Image 1 (cartoon, protein in one colour):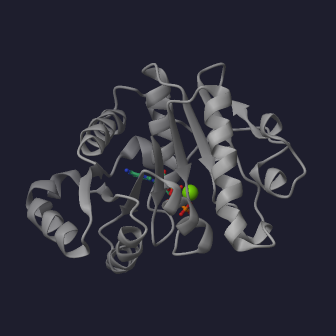
Image 2: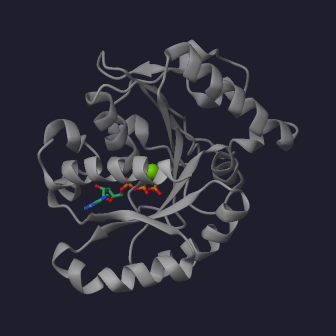
Length: 246
Ligand SMILES: Nc1ncnc2c1ncn2[C@@H]1O[C@H](COP(=O)(O)OP(=O)(O)OP(=O)(O)O)[C@@H](O)[C@H]1O
Ligand SMILES: [Mg+2]
Protein backbone atom coordinates (compact mmCIF):
# COMPACT_ATOMS: atom_id res chain seq x y z
CA UNK A 1 0.00 0.00 0.00
CA UNK A 2 1.14 3.58 -0.69
CA UNK A 3 0.36 5.78 2.31
CA UNK A 4 1.08 9.51 2.56
CA UNK A 5 1.16 11.78 5.60
CA UNK A 6 0.06 15.40 5.23
CA UNK A 7 -0.87 18.40 7.32
CA UNK A 8 -1.95 21.96 6.87
CA UNK A 9 0.30 23.54 9.49
CA UNK A 10 3.89 22.42 10.05
CA UNK A 11 5.08 20.50 13.08
CA UNK A 12 2.03 18.30 13.62
CA UNK A 13 4.21 15.16 13.79
CA UNK A 14 4.25 13.76 10.21
CA UNK A 15 7.98 12.99 10.02
CA UNK A 16 8.07 11.20 13.37
CA UNK A 17 4.90 9.26 12.62
CA UNK A 18 6.00 8.16 9.16
CA UNK A 19 9.51 7.26 10.37
CA UNK A 20 8.27 5.33 13.39
CA UNK A 21 5.56 3.57 11.40
CA UNK A 22 8.11 2.53 8.78
CA UNK A 23 10.43 1.11 11.49
CA UNK A 24 7.54 -0.61 13.26
CA UNK A 25 6.50 -2.36 10.05
CA UNK A 26 10.07 -3.41 9.28
CA UNK A 27 10.45 -4.86 12.77
CA UNK A 28 7.30 -6.86 12.08
CA UNK A 29 8.52 -8.52 8.91
CA UNK A 30 7.43 -6.06 6.22
CA UNK A 31 9.69 -4.60 3.57
CA UNK A 32 9.16 -0.87 3.60
CA UNK A 33 10.12 2.16 1.53
CA UNK A 34 10.12 5.58 3.15
CA UNK A 35 10.17 8.56 0.82
CA UNK A 36 10.82 12.15 1.87
CA UNK A 37 8.93 14.39 -0.54
CA UNK A 38 9.27 17.51 1.59
CA UNK A 39 12.09 19.03 -0.45
CA UNK A 40 11.70 22.46 1.09
CA UNK A 41 12.01 21.24 4.69
CA UNK A 42 13.24 17.65 4.82
CA UNK A 43 13.33 15.91 8.22
CA UNK A 44 13.76 12.18 7.55
CA UNK A 45 17.54 12.47 7.00
CA UNK A 46 17.90 14.05 10.45
CA UNK A 47 15.62 11.51 12.17
CA UNK A 48 17.59 8.59 10.69
CA UNK A 49 20.99 10.36 10.91
CA UNK A 50 21.61 9.63 7.26
CA UNK A 51 24.90 10.55 5.75
CA UNK A 52 23.42 11.62 2.45
CA UNK A 53 25.19 12.14 -0.82
CA UNK A 54 22.51 11.83 -3.48
CA UNK A 55 18.80 12.44 -2.94
CA UNK A 56 15.41 12.52 -4.61
CA UNK A 57 16.30 16.01 -5.79
CA UNK A 58 19.31 14.66 -7.75
CA UNK A 59 17.10 12.00 -9.28
CA UNK A 60 14.48 14.51 -10.36
CA UNK A 61 17.20 16.68 -11.88
CA UNK A 62 18.52 13.67 -13.80
CA UNK A 63 21.80 13.65 -11.85
CA UNK A 64 21.41 10.27 -10.10
CA UNK A 65 19.84 6.86 -10.64
CA UNK A 66 17.54 4.98 -8.27
CA UNK A 67 20.22 2.95 -6.49
CA UNK A 68 22.27 6.06 -5.70
CA UNK A 69 19.42 7.69 -3.79
CA UNK A 70 18.29 4.70 -1.69
CA UNK A 71 19.70 4.31 1.86
CA UNK A 72 19.20 1.10 3.82
CA UNK A 73 18.44 1.63 7.50
CA UNK A 74 20.91 -0.38 9.61
CA UNK A 75 20.78 -3.59 7.54
CA UNK A 76 17.02 -3.82 8.07
CA UNK A 77 14.39 -4.08 5.36
CA UNK A 78 13.73 -0.37 5.51
CA UNK A 79 14.86 1.56 2.43
CA UNK A 80 14.84 5.33 2.53
CA UNK A 81 14.82 7.93 -0.25
CA UNK A 82 15.72 11.25 1.41
CA UNK A 83 15.48 14.78 0.03
CA UNK A 84 17.76 17.75 0.14
CA UNK A 85 16.55 21.20 1.05
CA UNK A 86 15.81 23.33 -2.03
CA UNK A 87 13.69 26.33 -2.84
CA UNK A 88 11.79 24.44 -5.49
CA UNK A 89 9.10 21.83 -4.95
CA UNK A 90 9.02 18.46 -6.71
CA UNK A 91 6.85 19.79 -9.51
CA UNK A 92 9.28 22.65 -10.10
CA UNK A 93 11.98 20.19 -11.24
CA UNK A 94 9.91 19.26 -14.25
CA UNK A 95 9.67 21.62 -17.20
CA UNK A 96 6.16 20.40 -17.74
CA UNK A 97 4.29 20.05 -14.39
CA UNK A 98 2.06 17.35 -15.86
CA UNK A 99 5.20 15.21 -16.27
CA UNK A 100 6.08 15.50 -12.58
CA UNK A 101 3.45 12.99 -11.48
CA UNK A 102 4.46 10.48 -14.13
CA UNK A 103 8.14 10.84 -13.25
CA UNK A 104 7.61 10.37 -9.52
CA UNK A 105 5.09 7.58 -10.00
CA UNK A 106 7.44 5.62 -12.23
CA UNK A 107 10.31 6.15 -9.75
CA UNK A 108 8.22 4.76 -6.89
CA UNK A 109 7.01 1.80 -8.96
CA UNK A 110 10.64 1.00 -9.80
CA UNK A 111 11.65 1.47 -6.16
CA UNK A 112 8.90 -0.90 -5.03
CA UNK A 113 9.65 -3.63 -7.54
CA UNK A 114 13.45 -3.46 -7.32
CA UNK A 115 13.50 -3.67 -3.51
CA UNK A 116 10.43 -5.95 -3.21
CA UNK A 117 8.61 -3.48 -0.98
CA UNK A 118 5.29 -4.31 0.67
CA UNK A 119 4.54 -0.70 1.52
CA UNK A 120 5.73 2.78 0.61
CA UNK A 121 5.27 5.62 3.10
CA UNK A 122 5.53 9.27 2.01
CA UNK A 123 6.42 12.08 4.37
CA UNK A 124 5.00 15.21 2.73
CA UNK A 125 5.49 18.92 3.14
CA UNK A 126 2.91 20.86 5.13
CA UNK A 127 0.35 23.07 3.41
CA UNK A 128 -1.59 22.83 0.23
CA UNK A 129 1.28 22.98 -2.21
CA UNK A 130 1.78 21.30 -5.58
CA UNK A 131 4.10 18.52 -4.41
CA UNK A 132 1.92 17.53 -1.48
CA UNK A 133 -1.15 17.38 -3.73
CA UNK A 134 0.77 15.38 -6.30
CA UNK A 135 1.71 12.73 -3.73
CA UNK A 136 -1.81 12.77 -2.31
CA UNK A 137 -3.12 11.97 -5.78
CA UNK A 138 -0.75 8.99 -6.07
CA UNK A 139 -1.45 7.44 -2.66
CA UNK A 140 -3.93 4.71 -1.90
CA UNK A 141 -4.49 6.26 1.51
CA UNK A 142 -3.64 9.77 2.65
CA UNK A 143 -3.55 10.62 6.33
CA UNK A 144 -3.90 14.24 7.40
CA UNK A 145 -2.20 14.79 10.75
CA UNK A 146 -3.74 17.54 12.84
CA UNK A 147 -3.49 18.82 16.38
CA UNK A 148 -6.41 20.39 18.20
CA UNK A 149 -5.07 23.86 17.44
CA UNK A 150 -7.74 26.00 15.81
CA UNK A 151 -5.39 27.08 13.00
CA UNK A 152 -4.69 23.45 12.20
CA UNK A 153 -8.33 22.43 12.24
CA UNK A 154 -9.34 25.18 9.82
CA UNK A 155 -6.63 24.26 7.34
CA UNK A 156 -7.35 20.56 7.72
CA UNK A 157 -10.90 21.30 6.65
CA UNK A 158 -9.61 22.87 3.43
CA UNK A 159 -7.23 19.96 2.77
CA UNK A 160 -10.04 17.45 3.29
CA UNK A 161 -12.04 18.87 0.37
CA UNK A 162 -9.04 18.60 -1.94
CA UNK A 163 -8.17 15.10 -0.74
CA UNK A 164 -11.70 13.88 -1.42
CA UNK A 165 -11.62 15.33 -4.91
CA UNK A 166 -8.33 13.52 -5.53
CA UNK A 167 -9.99 10.28 -4.36
CA UNK A 168 -7.00 9.50 -2.17
CA UNK A 169 -9.11 7.95 0.60
CA UNK A 170 -8.30 10.63 3.15
CA UNK A 171 -8.23 9.94 6.88
CA UNK A 172 -7.62 12.20 9.84
CA UNK A 173 -5.21 11.48 12.68
CA UNK A 174 -5.15 13.73 15.73
CA UNK A 175 -1.68 13.96 17.29
CA UNK A 176 -0.29 15.41 20.54
CA UNK A 177 -3.57 15.00 22.38
CA UNK A 178 -3.43 15.40 26.19
CA UNK A 179 -4.15 11.89 27.49
CA UNK A 180 -6.06 13.03 30.55
CA UNK A 181 -8.49 14.97 28.39
CA UNK A 182 -9.14 12.17 25.89
CA UNK A 183 -12.40 10.87 27.35
CA UNK A 184 -13.73 14.42 27.65
CA UNK A 185 -12.77 15.28 24.07
CA UNK A 186 -13.78 11.97 22.43
CA UNK A 187 -17.15 13.23 21.28
CA UNK A 188 -15.72 16.56 20.16
CA UNK A 189 -13.16 14.69 18.07
CA UNK A 190 -15.79 12.51 16.42
CA UNK A 191 -17.90 15.56 15.78
CA UNK A 192 -14.91 17.40 14.39
CA UNK A 193 -13.98 14.55 12.03
CA UNK A 194 -17.56 14.51 10.75
CA UNK A 195 -17.58 18.27 10.18
CA UNK A 196 -14.19 18.17 8.48
CA UNK A 197 -15.47 15.26 6.41
CA UNK A 198 -12.56 12.89 7.05
CA UNK A 199 -12.78 9.37 8.43
CA UNK A 200 -10.92 9.27 11.77
CA UNK A 201 -7.98 6.86 11.95
CA UNK A 202 -7.35 7.39 15.64
CA UNK A 203 -5.39 9.60 17.94
CA UNK A 204 -1.82 9.74 19.25
CA UNK A 205 -1.35 11.22 22.70
CA UNK A 206 1.17 13.83 23.65
CA UNK A 207 4.17 11.77 24.66
CA UNK A 208 6.99 12.91 26.91
CA UNK A 209 9.57 10.51 25.48
CA UNK A 210 8.78 11.78 21.97
CA UNK A 211 8.83 15.42 23.00
CA UNK A 212 12.15 14.97 24.82
CA UNK A 213 13.73 13.07 21.94
CA UNK A 214 13.72 16.17 19.70
CA UNK A 215 13.69 13.94 16.60
CA UNK A 216 17.04 12.47 17.70
CA UNK A 217 15.62 9.04 18.47
CA UNK A 218 13.30 6.63 16.73
CA UNK A 219 10.97 5.83 19.58
CA UNK A 220 9.77 2.40 18.34
CA UNK A 221 13.42 1.29 18.25
CA UNK A 222 14.64 2.89 21.49
CA UNK A 223 11.49 2.39 23.56
CA UNK A 224 9.29 -0.16 21.75
CA UNK A 225 7.11 -0.67 24.84
CA UNK A 226 6.46 3.03 25.33
CA UNK A 227 3.04 4.61 24.97
CA UNK A 228 4.08 6.12 21.63
CA UNK A 229 5.33 2.73 20.38
CA UNK A 230 2.03 1.08 21.29
CA UNK A 231 0.10 3.83 19.57
CA UNK A 232 2.07 3.36 16.36
CA UNK A 233 1.16 -0.35 16.52
CA UNK A 234 -2.49 0.63 17.04
CA UNK A 235 -2.31 3.05 14.15
CA UNK A 236 -1.14 0.29 11.81
CA UNK A 237 -3.97 -1.97 12.97
CA UNK A 238 -6.51 0.74 12.15
CA UNK A 239 -4.88 1.50 8.80
CA UNK A 240 -5.22 -2.13 7.74
CA UNK A 241 -8.81 -2.35 9.02
CA UNK A 242 -9.66 0.87 7.25
CA UNK A 243 -7.92 -0.19 4.04
CA UNK A 244 -9.94 -3.38 4.06
CA UNK A 245 -13.09 -1.32 3.66
CA UNK A 246 -11.76 0.54 0.59
N1 LIG B 1 2.80 12.68 20.09
C1 LIG B 1 3.74 13.60 20.33
N2 LIG B 1 3.99 14.00 21.59
C2 LIG B 1 4.93 14.93 21.86
N3 LIG B 1 5.69 15.52 20.94
C3 LIG B 1 5.51 15.17 19.66
C4 LIG B 1 4.52 14.19 19.27
N4 LIG B 1 4.58 14.05 17.92
C5 LIG B 1 5.55 14.88 17.49
N5 LIG B 1 6.10 15.56 18.52
C6 LIG B 1 7.18 16.57 18.44
O1 LIG B 1 6.76 17.61 17.56
C7 LIG B 1 7.87 18.11 16.82
C8 LIG B 1 7.51 18.13 15.34
O2 LIG B 1 7.39 16.80 14.88
P1 LIG B 1 7.67 16.42 13.36
O3 LIG B 1 8.96 16.99 12.91
O4 LIG B 1 7.48 14.96 13.23
O5 LIG B 1 6.49 17.22 12.65
P2 LIG B 1 6.26 17.49 11.11
O6 LIG B 1 4.80 17.51 10.92
O7 LIG B 1 7.04 16.52 10.30
O8 LIG B 1 6.88 18.94 10.93
P3 LIG B 1 7.12 19.72 9.52
O9 LIG B 1 5.75 20.10 9.04
O10 LIG B 1 7.93 20.90 9.91
O11 LIG B 1 7.81 18.78 8.59
C9 LIG B 1 9.07 17.22 17.15
O12 LIG B 1 9.92 17.90 18.05
C10 LIG B 1 8.45 16.01 17.80
O13 LIG B 1 9.29 15.44 18.78
MG1 LIG C 1 8.39 16.87 8.67
